[in-house]
Amino acid sequence: MSREIVYIGFGSNLGDRLDFCDRAVTLLSLLPHSLVTGVSSLYETEPLPENNPGPQWFLNGIVRLETDLTPQSLLEVCREVEKSLGRDQDDRSGPRTLDLDILLYGARVINEPGLIVPHPRLHLRRFVLAPLAELAPDLRHPLLNKTMQELLAQLGDRSVVRRLDPQPSSRYGSRPSCSSAAAARDSA
Ligand code: ADP
Ligand code: MG
Figure 1: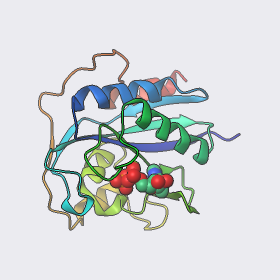
Figure 2: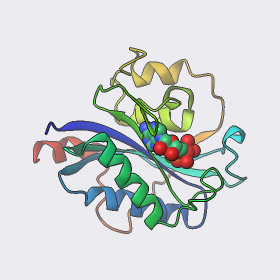
Figure 3: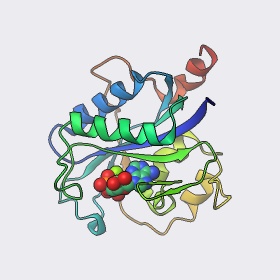
Figure 4: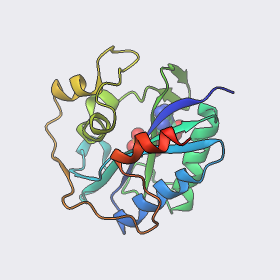
């Protein structure tokens, strides 16, 4: 098994959004063969009408995970976490307690019926690129060969994405901040 650095986007626009995001990060941090090495700030973001998620704004962020899990296993885990946090499986595109998307899995390019990596809309969405550029500004998109910072700078999406200020603290005490990522990696 080879350890890869993976970026997972999370978002919630239904119910106690902060608690769902918090619990999602905590559950990801408990995965076997995996280590959460960074979490972006939380952002409040305007819902994009094309996704039809209802009027409530989202809380969004990104987790960086070092993992031995295969992309397919990781997707399964993401679906299980979504389910355990009450995601409506019959109306997946509606308002959601929690959405988890595999944005990048190392530099791998995957094109399977249920799994496309890099996530096909990563480079088009401000709610993804803002936290991703915070966590990994110099990371290159494997297909577009641009850094996350460059993709954010050239982005056409004008929807509102604002970093929460002050940042809420985690209720579960296990959310590493962006700046503690290097320390976590060094001690891995
Ligand atoms: P959204 O695009 O709003 O996140 P869903 O969460 O319902 O919508 O996901 C729709 C489908 O996208 C899922 O059935 C999943 O199998 C598929 N999918 C393809 N690539 C990915 C990926 N990289 N991460 C997560 N889901 C993915
Ligand atoms: Mg999704």
